[in-house]
Length: 270
Ligand code: SF4
Image 1 (cartoon, rainbow, N blue to C red):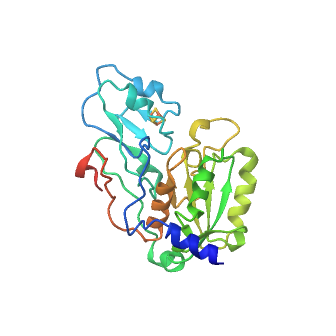
Image 2 (image 1 turned 180 degrees about the vertical axis):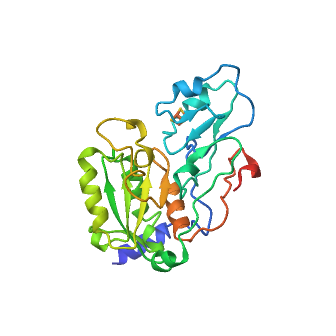
Image 3 (image 1 turned 60 degrees about the horizontal axis):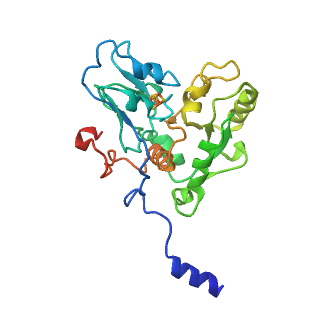
């Protein structure tokens, strides 16, 4: 007992103060929300479209990048001779609608807004989630698990993962929804009592990710279930997941924080 107390005194409080305090330091290689500049592409250039492994970039009606399909490999930014695409340090990428994940150079990024008042009354202080890995590779699952560690302490917001869908208020889904997991996912969804929410985490759960259009998957959850929150990434950083969850329950209502190393300045603020 004494040893435990001494260790606690020595180690001090380990849980981060986010969202009231600053976000944790992100690694140098962290790639956040991409932006597309207004400059023109070189005539006839479509290198970014060709190199993208998930067909996340289109040029038909101006350059557009679907961050719901993006793997954040950075190849498009590296190969673009006009430097039209670059990745910021913005970790806040969660949205409420699938369309909001399509990024062009002109539109404002629509970050996730909170649930309506009735749902917030139910879930803002206690949200129990059943996690379903619908064919995930364990990367999104691992970064979701991180939120349970002492550094992040997801439980301090009343958000917890539960074993039974009957004890849950919603599902947090990862993976592209393989054919093998389809029935299990739908049964789990049906077992959650109403009202319920659905959260899709990661490129696979949103669009199928690198497996998009493979015959053994369903291209994620968006065509199968009513998704309330989409958190892009491959996998999303725990901070991106936490930011999305807190926005959904109304714990974060302010505009996107700017991280000092961000090279966009205030023009990127939403
Ligand atoms: S960073 Fe995203 S959009 Fe760019 S090439 Fe990689 S997967 Fe495609």
